[in-house]
Length: 96
Image (cartoon, rainbow, N blue to C red; front, side, top):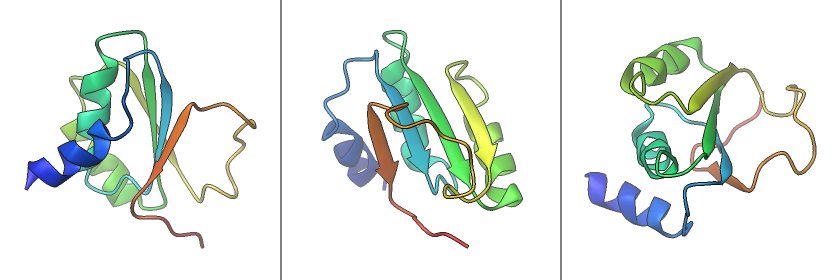
């Protein structure tokens, strides 16, 4: 099942230096592929989800990636600066 996720992330053409936001990260399957590609440079991934359970799950799944941080909450309510990210991935998007 990883192949569709890998192809989706491949479509970003990441060089490894990007700053990426993954909103609706849920289990982290897509996030893992993003974090992996960003390790080749100085890239960074921020994972956001509205569920504490999913944030805990993704933190466990991505614990070996030092280039990732996590935010709990609705993207509309979080203080995110305009143009803070090069790429925004949203495969499980929802707002409360």
